[in-house]
Length: 509
Image (cartoon, rainbow, N blue to C red; front, side):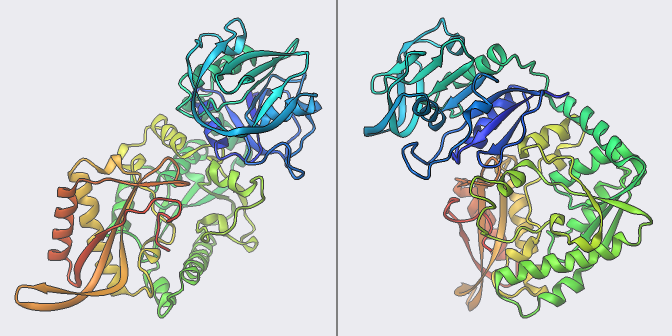
């Protein structure tokens, strides 16, 4: 049985980061919201409480039954978790005289304590809290302090319950990884055997046990997630996997042909379906972004359903769902507010009557890539930028027409080719061109023009949940702009998007 760590999420912005740090230590973990906790099973080696935007003093502060964890499992409580245990054990928590946010240095460390082994006085930590622990019960021992926070960490005597007021998961906590490893390995006894190779081995075995000799259908997009899912499934069930690649007319230039060519030797039973006319016909005259997304999703379902019925005795639908999708759907506050409709095969309706298999649902995006490497997938697949399900349909602001698609495909290809040529493609998380519903005056030769505008978007990110705009070199941007204006008929102006997420989404629609 695979050992794991449970992370109890009280709504902190850093909860996913805790999970990442745990997994970097080759230890499997799962995040659960405080209000939807699982039954704790024998494979659980320890528990981590996250921080929270709430104060423990609020009437509506998150509450849990501490007796389920304290004294039963090794427990590390971070920030809100530390204050929560202190308050519910008879300690005091009061508002700080000043907000304690940012870097601080430990001026006292009990290095005899297991949690702080190898961490010295002066070690930098990252604080982020408005309350502070003012006093602790007699059975608590103080194990770390800073100049402004006396109770920076404590240990409940004769137990494996530890608590820290700072955030070890943030890189600004210089020895945060050491502290987490001390807890996970020395206190919880984790074996650190959760690797990409181990994941591949156990997942293939799980798929074989679950699916057996049944047939599985997968919508292949050519992206990282669907590609890794396809190869995992193929290794488990061989020719019983059937992949369908739908051309919705909104792919990048020549992408339909190139994906079919690249995957022809993978043994994945790939069938390409040219449905361009159907999608573009349905989108004619539609300008509203949400309506466009729904049309693209609906038509995709229709096409996919029709094609899957041509395969005899299919019983399973495979999806490339990854862990952030799962976390979001069971978040502390319930499913997240809809920013945009998510378009993937996960939206398939009940009428398809297929059971679902999701081999990547426990992985973050970077972990998917590492698993792909372990499976032997080539870098040109694993290094592909994310591309939205609705494709160029949400990169054309306003009505989608075949003419606009052709213009955007040409502009986007020039953009991406130049990023690759300049050695920048792999340094950018996602890049794409946007067709704007704007015409502007220009001069070409001796002629006045009144043509369209292309916006270029390039961002740095880990998982797309937040993103910063990339500082691409001016000479590269100048070359891209010049080529697009000179080579793409109908474009006379190129602009660069310097918005970060939040508040601006990566896609424009």
